Image (cartoon, rainbow, N blue to C red):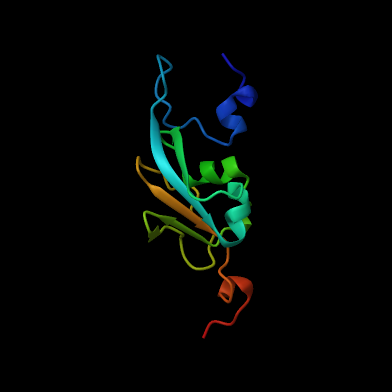
Length: 120
């Protein structure tokens, strides 16, 4: 048995939620991840990424895997729908992902309230 600190999934920031029993391969889901604006460098300069992640993965697992500081996330979309709690509130990191989901993370959009622009 691996020590929790040496588990490769933990090193990549992926939780073990939804991993099922240990009798074989852990179930996975396919997702697509996009990062925009000030978060695009965390994606390694590449465009959208197709990922296989363990079933039960939540947004916080992706954030940790790519090392994105939570306080730099301005907007989270899942399948084009805004899943952030409310304007200015912390990001909902516990939103569980489903097979086929498209996740978009964005930093503040230039000239938005996130950059200190007045809201008119």
